[in-house]
Length: 460
View (cartoon, rainbow, N blue to C red):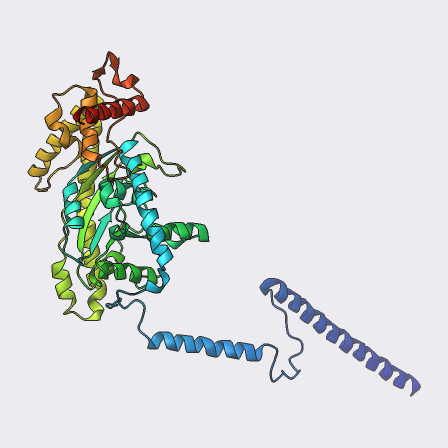
C-alpha cells in the first residue's frame, strides 16, 4: 500500500511538472511571437486590454473642437461662391484712395519724372533704341478721349524692361507729367520685400501683386481703379520674365483679360514688343550694360469691343472664358509681333556689321523694314531715330550731324532733353583733321555749346 501510494504521488508530481513546462513553453512562444510582430510591423502588442478605457482621454476636447472648426470651414467654403467661379467684380474709382496720402503723391510727382528721365538718358544716350510705329503709342497716349483708359502690353525679357523701355519711348516733356504716366504691377516677393524697397516702388507708381492669389486680389482691383479714372496701366501678360533670355514668350495669363473687361470703360490696348534688353541686363547681371541696341516694334491697338459687348449679355459662368479669349487674342498679336521684331533686330545687326557707317545701315534698314511691312500686310508706319536723318545724309559735317540730332530732342523747358541720340557713336566724318572716334564726349559738348553761344551772340 505504501509503495502504491508513493507511486501515485510520483506520477502526479511528474504530470504537474510537465503541465508547468507546457505553460512555460506557450508563454515563451507567445513572447517570441510578440517580439517578431513588433520587429516586423513596428507595433506594440497591447497586453492591458482588460483595463477600462478612460471616458475623456487627454486631448479629447481639443481634437473635438478642431474637428468642429474643420467641418464649419468646409461648410462655409461649399456654401459661398467658389474661387474658381469667375464674375465681374466692379471696382470704384476711390478704391484704395485712403492709402495714397498727399505726401505719397508729392513724392511721386518728383520721383517719377526724375527716375524716368534718368532712364531716358541711359537708353537714348548710352545705348541705341530703334523704334518702329512709335506714333501709334503717342497717339493713344496723348490724343485719346478724356477719361479713356489705356493699357499697354509687352513681352518681358529683363528685370529693367520697365522703366527702361517705357522711358525710351516717351519724350521728356511727357516724362515730366507724373500724374499721367503709367502704373505697373510687380510681384510683392520681388519689389516689396522690405520697407525700403516698398517705399521706393510706391514712389514710382508700382502696385504690389501677390503670386497665386488669383485675378480678384487687391493689386488687380487697384489697377482697375486706376483705369476707371482714365489712367494708364502697363502690364506684362506673361506674368514673369522669359526663361531663355527673350528667345520665346511664355503663356499669357488671364489676369490681363480681367484688367480689360472689368474696367468701367473698355480701355485702349496697345501692344509692343522689344528685343535687345537681354543684352543690356543679362540673366544674373547686377548692373545694366551700355553700348547696346534695343529694337522696339509698336503695333496697332487690339480690337476687343466684340468681347466687351458679349460679356454684358452672358452669364457669370462664362466670364472665365471671356478672360481667356482676351488673353489669347493679346497673346496671338504679341507672338506675331515678336517674330517680326526678331527679324528686324537680326537684319539691323547684319547691316551694322557689314556697312561702313552705322547711320547709313540704319537708313537702309528703315527702307527694308518699310518694304517688308507693306508686303506682309502689317500696315505700320515706321518711325525711328534714323528716319529724321534721311534728308541730311548729304551733310558730312560732324557738328551738323550732332546739331541736327540734338535739335530733335533739345527743348529748353525740359530738364534732360540733352540725351542726344547717337552723340557718342563713331562716325567716319572728319572734324578739323581729327576723326570723330578720337573726339571725346566732353569736347563734343564743348564745341556744340560754343557754337550755340556764338550764334546767339551774333544774333543779339
